[in-house]
Every structure is written in C-alpha cells, then in structure tokens.
Length: 138
Image 1 (cartoon, helix red, strand yellow):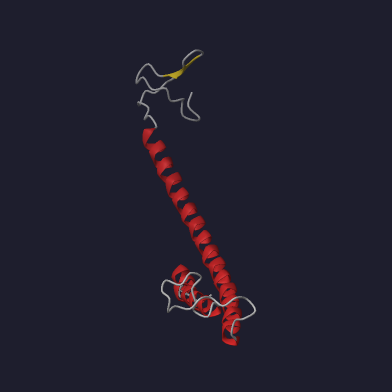
Image 2: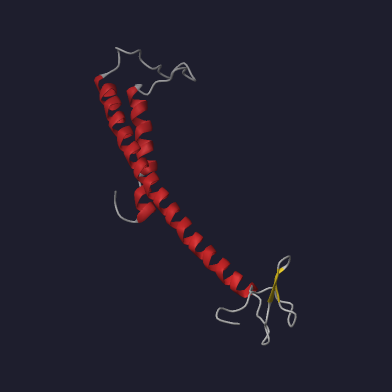
C-alpha cells in the first residue's frame, strides 16, 4: 500500500474495477447473453471460447484477487482511523464533562460549616449548600 493514508490506500480502486469489468467482457468474447440487436454477438458456450478470452478470464481472476487485497487494506486503514477518531472524541468529551462538573460544584460561603443531617445529608445553614466540609476542616 502506498503512502498518503486512506486516499493513498483507495487510489486506483475504481480503475482496477474497470479493468476487471473489461476483462470479464473479454472472457465472454464481448458477446451478450441476450444480444440487443441481431448484429450483436452472443457469448460463446464454455469449451468454445478463444485463447484470448481464456487469457482474459485468468487475468480477471488475478485482478479480482488484487482488488480484494486492496479493499482489505482500505478497510483496515479506515477502521484504524475511525478508532483513533473515537478515542480523540471520547477524551475531548471526558475533558468537557470534567470542566462542566467543576463549574457546577457549589462554592461554599466563607462561613461554610455544614452539618450532617441523617435524612438530608450535608447542609450549611449560612449558604444553603449541600457541599460537605472541606478536608481538614472542623
């Protein structure tokens, strides 16, 4: 696979598919299963195809194998990039959530002296905050 990331991996796939299409046509001696007009050729039956048609069929198989291998490379590159993108987005979301949580933390008043109520939890009568006492506070 050449450089250039996903663009490099996908480069030339369309041309290779076009070549396969051409070679399959050559395998069929450029005939039609149901000719659209009387002057169009039909596909010769198996066992009666020309040497050039047989060679084109073999080349088509080689090209199909190459296309499959290239598609697997493109798929692997795309999966890798999608996973990296997911990781980056998840890290960014985690950071935003962390900052949001920090902004939502109540700021205790200077006289913050919460008491623990068995039913309600922590409560400071001075500011109404439910924040627990700061570590080390008495």
